[in-house]
Length: 122
Length: 122
Image (cartoon, rainbow over all chains, first blue to last red; front, side, top):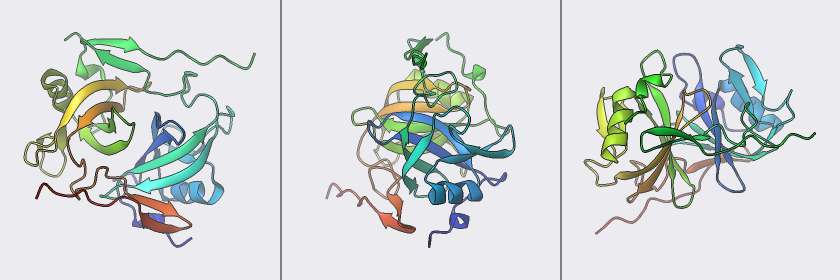
């Protein structure tokens, strides 16, 4: 791999925001954070891997839930301080079991739930 | 407006990331930052307004360039620490004159430009 993740611009915690987008229908699924090693692991493994700020550990998306994100393509923005990650998402991306984390819309000053949790395997 | 932007979760600089998505075709156009007042101004004015970290000032998108973002809908994620902003984008969203800031793809370890600047009005 010629691309060097260290050439990205990380914040003062060494992190860069990564937006996960459904490669098939364009839905924005979630936003999480990566450090340089998480970017490298994502590119090398093909499994989208974030850095969990709460656990201070690598977070291979779906490792425990099975709701993995297969990498399709990483894109870098003009300032090199944000990533767009195109993925094939298995099941829900959100820990609430919804397809996307962005299930709350602001409409006429009120919060409206626009997406229901997905049905489980049972 | 009943929705109170102060109920969002801002970082230690009082900012929240806002992902701008083309409401018509789903393209992710850019990511920038808002503070609580920028969120309120966006909702009240219908013109997407960020907080410029470099200038430390409100940034009404397109105010100088004419490349405005008309607000369609704001969505909040499950953790309330990221916004998805659906917009009608006039012209390019990126300061490089490209439609989207995410015009660089990582393919086979190399950076590939996948989008050209838009033609100007002249």
